Amino acid sequence: MENRHTAVSFELFPPKTEKGMEKLKLTVNQLKQLQPEYFSVTYGAGGSTQERTFATVDWLREQGIDTAPHLSCIGADKDEIREILERYRRQDIHRIVALRGDLPSGSGLGGLGELNYANELVRFIRENFADHFHIEVAAYPEFHPQAENARADLDNFARKVRSGANGAITQYFYNPDAYWRFLDDCQARGIDIPVTPGIMPITNYSSLARFSDACGAEIPRWIRKRLEAWGDDLESIRDFGTEVVSRLCTQLLEGGAPGLHFYTMNQSGSVLNICKNLGIHAPAP
Image 1: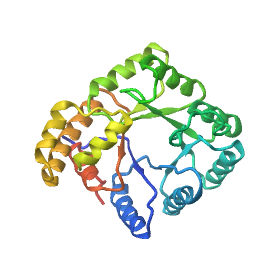
Image 2: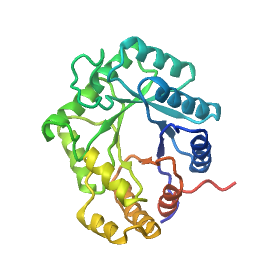
Image 3: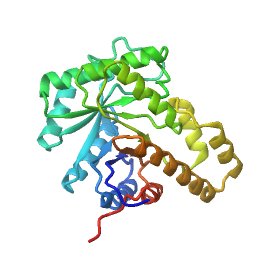
């Protein structure tokens, strides 16, 4: 495939150890050669987890890298969220990924915080920071696992858009028809913000299957059965995964997707191979 200009972005998670941070820095230095629009950083609410998010964001900004911190609202009060957003504004950060966040185990929504849904967080950001932040929200082409039904999930997405979201990033998927149908449903509701596909490289079958079962992302049977057959042969799994995901990305881009957002898991190898297959290269010196 010939070289093309494709908008890409990469998700990172905050490392728990100094060794993990060094690995993240190496990953970022490799991936930034592809000139991504930004790196996003996942968010841990409260305590040391939140501090690790801040440390990762701080390092990225020190390198002059455009950064989009995740911000979840479940269990937080408005003053805390306002303080975090002020911190990011001082760092000249202009993009936020606004999320509800995971519910604490065994809890419902009642009494967890002042903002319990992502649309409430989006509205709060707009009311307090006007248009300073470009706000990305989550979208679920195969529907959120906690949604009552497909219609309710689309209603939830529409509320986030009406509250002021600029764009959306999807949960990962391997069936492009789910993405196209989701866009059709959005168009029918008058939703016209860019919806960027989230892309999960395939590098380890057992962890992918476990995570997919938890988050509601479907691994098509033909992919699952092939991955099962390789057992612990990680090299074959990675080669097959690179082929499958590269083909998926090609279909999405040729169909008009606005870009690709890679869930890197703080690793660069598979992402670099997929981007190479797509003709996305570092510019020549």
